[in-house]
Structures are given as structure tokens and as C-alpha cells.
Length: 385
Image 1 (spheres, one colour):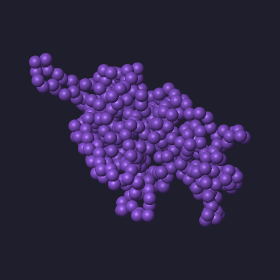
Image 2: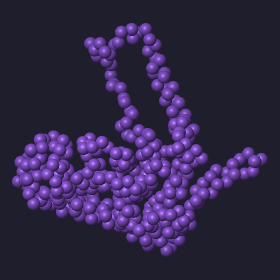
Image 3: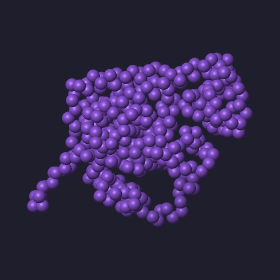
């Protein structure tokens, strides 16, 4: 493990803080490879933006990435179950693996919900783990203006007998306490943690600070190299063993924060496709080469998926040219482009139409209808594959 930890003798008053040693990379030999990957990411992002399918591609990518992330951890989750679970239409009781896949999906969406540098912070890490608020959560603002004099609920009985400033002072005291905690560098963690789940000898907060320091110290490096080193540091520090998929999300967030792309690349799919498997004995150059292979596979998968979406959209839009202006068929097409699997009940719920109307729209698509995935009569699903 590439740590530099220093501590003086017992008689010394000062202790040298622990830090992560950055690798010494052979820049002359890897510069060309980094440039090719950077150009490939920029071209894919530009192609994605020009296609008009960026939102649909990202939505499909998030769902499939959550399933592939659990597959890398040894758990098999059906993408159809995840799509239905995300829409609140579970056909069976959610399993533990499905719940973890939903957490991975929520983490990817959380990373995209805020500006690019936010996931690379203490608050961002807490939100991605599910223990911190995302934008719009936990901020319940009170309505402005004076209450209506005729509203009896606005003037409860015996309200004048209580101290009118007590609630305001309590809010101010709580705000000051949280501010002092943040300024002191402390993170609000649970006081009681089970030793059966968490290692008592591992300082999680210190490892978070070390990783964030690595991201800060590599901010002037090429984006691909900085993401590779941050991913290696994540594995070396063994951050969040119960969330093994979060390291690839953070590596993709670094590429997004550095301006190479405005999306999260499918690194889990690229890792599954590539032959690189970190064992903990690789050097910095081997890890960088492995991360480059993961990126190349992720770009190839992203381009192929975008090709399929473009072709399917062109075929289905030929049918919509003869539709009425109030037809729900364009909405069904957008549903096919944004989800890897669509069923009749799912389309009826999201489009707010009857299942019979969905059947008629599916028949209206004719030969442009995406491939049927189940082949059964009672449970039918279609998707662009």
C-alpha cells in the first residue's frame, strides 16, 4: 500500500500527518496514449451532444451500469427488475441485490444532479453514500409574507403565551453548531458502529481526507492520469468496502469535473469488458495502462449503444410523421430511447394512458417496434438491444 506515514518518537510533541504518495509516472512514454484517450472522450461527448439523445443515453447508461456494477461484485440483478423497481412497479419483493443496485443507480443520478466538482467533496461523498442530502432535499423553506388573518391554523390558541423567539433561537443555535462542526473538519458519523460490519482499526474519515487530497494534488495532471491515480488510491485506501462500485463513479466524476465530458461514462461496463483486474501488486504504470483499457472499452460500448439509439429513433420517427399533434406515440418513443426495457403497464403508468392505448401504439409502430425481449404472452417487454 503506497502510504507515507510519519510519526516521531514518544518524546516528540509533533506528529507528521499521513499522506498518500503520488506515483512517478513516465510521462514521455504515456503522453501519446493519454492524448488519444482524451481525444476519444471529447469526440464521443461531442457526438452525443449533436445526436440529441444525451438524456436518453445517460438514463439507459445509469440503469445498465447499476446492474453491471453489482455483477462485478458477484451479484446478478435483472435489468428489468431494476427498471420496474425504479418506477415503483415491483412484480415481486425486492431482493437485497436489487436494493443495492438501486443504491448504485441513485448514486449515479446524485453525481449528475449537481455541478461537476461537487461529488469530489466531503458533502458529495456523503450524498453518494446515501447519508447526506442532495440538492432540494432537507431544505424546507417557510412561505414568505404574513399569514392570512382569516386562517385559524395560522394563529393557534394560546400562541401569545409562549416565547415567540424560542423557536428562532433554537434554529440559530443548531445552525451555529453545524457550522462549527464543519469548520472544525469533523464529519457527523454515528457514534455506535457494529464491529461485525466496520473495521474498528480503519479511520474512514482520515481515508476520505487522504483521497480528497490526492484529487487536489493531481488537479494539474492530465485528466485521464488523474482519474487513474485517484482510482488506484481509492482501491489502496479501501474506501467503503460495502460500496465497491463507488470508486468507478468517482473516477468518471473526475473526468466530468475536468471538462472532458458532461456525462458519466460507463466505466463498470468497460471494466467488465476489459481484461484488467487489479490484484494490489500492480505498479503505477500497470494500473494506468489498465485504466486506459477500461476507458477504451467504455467508449466502444458507449458508441455502439448510441448507434443503436440513433438507428431506432430514425425508424420509429418515420411513423410519427403521420400522427396527430396530441398523440402519445412520441412519448412512447422517448420511453424506448431512455430505458433498456419497456412493458405495457410501465408505459401506461408513465404516459398516463390505458394499457389498451399502449397496445394500439405498439401495433402502430409495426416493423419499427423494438425487439421483444421476453417472448411470453402474460409478461411482454420490448427494448432496443
